[in-house]
Amino acid sequence: MLHDFRDDSVIVTRARKLIVQQIFTAANYEYAIQWIFHQDGTIQPEIKLTGILNTYAMDPNEDTHGWGTQVYPGVNAHNHQHLFCLRIDANVDGPNNTIFMADAVASDAPVGSPENYYGNAFSAKRTKFSTVGESATDYNGATSRTWDICNTNKLHPYSGKPASYKLVSREVPGLLPKEGSLVWKRAGFARHAVHVTKYRDDQLWPAGRHVPQTSGEPSLGLPEWMVNGGESIDNTDVVLWHTFGVTHIPAPEDFPIMPVEPITLLLRPRNFFTNNPVMDVPPSFCSTPSQVAANGAGVTDATDKLSKLAFTNGSVCCADGANGL
Image (tube, rainbow, N blue to C red; front, side, top):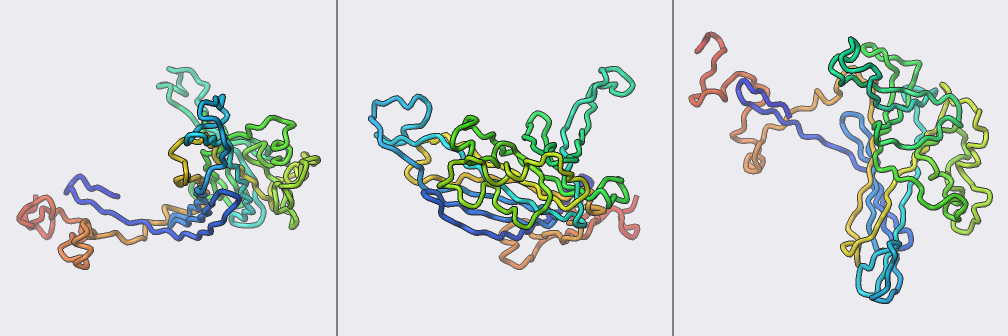
C-alpha cells in the first residue's frame, strides 16, 4: 500500500499467489503440503498439520510428570515432534552454486568511536561452506540466521553481490531425543538444521528408503552422505537439506480433532532482480465491497496523482494553472 500524504490518496495493489497443494494421511495425522508462489519471486513451502492426537489411557488422577497432557478425563496425549526435511536442489541462475550462512552481528567498535558513533551499527557476517562437513549447522535466533544459495559467477550490477535465493526459516526445533536413542539413530537428518551435499542422482531420501523397521544402525540417508566431510561443495552442483518443524506439547484444545498447526518458511530472491519485480502489477481501484459489486463504479482513478482529494469541490491545485500557486 502506498499513502501519499500530500493529497491523502492511497494506492493499494492486491497480491496474487499460485498455490500447489497435496494432502496425505500418515497414521493418525493429516498433512497438507502447500507450495505458494508469490509475484515477487518468493517461494513459500508451508505444511499444515491436523488430525487426531496419539493418545493413551490413564487414570484420571495419574500424574503425567510433564511427559504428556490429560486432554480429556482418562486420556493422555504424549509430547512429540514433527520434523520435516526439505530437499532443495537449487540451480540459482545456473547449475554451479555456493552456500553461505548469514548472521546479523553488532559492530565490535565501541560507542562513540568513529566507526560506531551512536552504537547502533551492525552487519551480516557471511560464512562460506567450502566442504560438506562445514555445512552441518543449526539455526540461531539471536543472530536471525539465514542461509544463501548463491551463484558467485553472477554478480548484481548494482550491489555487486552474487545472485542468490535466501532460506528464511524460523520454526527450527532441535532434535530432542538423546544421542544413542532409537529416534536419534533413525532420524539422522534431524541432528542439524542444514546439511549441504554434492548432487547425486540416487540421494533422495534423507532418512533412508525404509525407516519404520530399521534399527538405525547404521544411520541411513544424510549421515551416510556426510561421511566424506572434506568433499568440496564450492561452486558446484549442490543440494541443501533443511530440517524444520514443530515441537508439540498437546493441550485440551487439540482434542478430539486437532486444529490446523501451520509451519512455514521462505525462499526469497536476493540480488537476483534489478528492482522490485512487482512494480508493474496494476493497482486495485475498489476500496469497498459495494464498489467491487458495481464493477468499479465511483472509484478514484489511482493512476491520477493530481490533488483532487484535497479539495471537496473536485478542483485541483496544480493542473494547467487552475488554482495554481
